[in-house]
Length: 285
Image 1 (cartoon, rainbow, N blue to C red):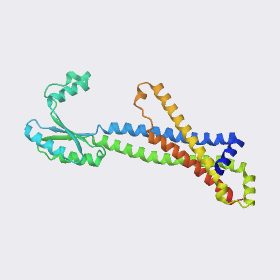
Image 2: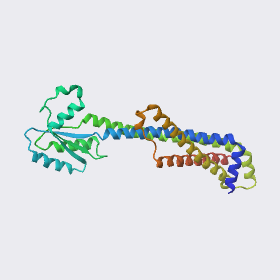
Image 3: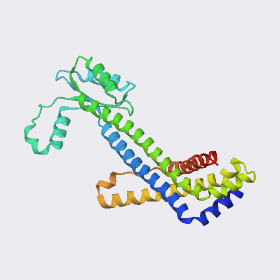
Image 4: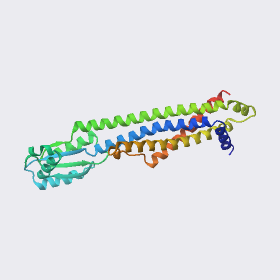
């Protein structure tokens, strides 16, 4: 109760300083949030591309349909496989003419072989796993060739790893910068009340007693800064979707749990900045 009263009193004494602390936290988290939005959408885009990773095995013309059906059943039982489809010559021809309409006259009946399309499970699309599935399919005698875009799969997997590492590194960097800025802002508040803290120490106040109002003040600033950052992220997201039209329709926003984490993160930053700043000052009083 005392800490809350003193924290409110301090905010009233220096409203501009308090507002500066909240805005600082908000903009720090806003920058972090924008990066998070970009990272989430990049990850979603990569997952959508990853869904197209498949193994295509071309069937020889003299293959018996019973043997193909039995092989499809075996392949469908692989732990890595989600679904197996059979594409007849007619269907392959129809698909080619549809996907490459300007070259429709080039394709003639019988020019494309029948094939087995193997769709892999999510999380089972790394180059090593895809190659392993392709090698096992090659062992069937009626398979003429197996294609899965080896170089394309490797580049996609490498891009995903780079995006993950870069995301973690930049996330940590943003968090560190936010803590430093917030700490500096809280430090200004502490210095503004340095005389008051010195008097409290002279009359026997403990460090815990002195820290209380500052920690509560940091917590309140962190919560308010987090909520403001969420509002800024939503406004930016809405503006982006509105300005990009159909392209913006595929962009996604944070889940409710992510928004809650932003506010919690802001609270922790406010507490951490207050704790570090007050602790440093108390050591020199």
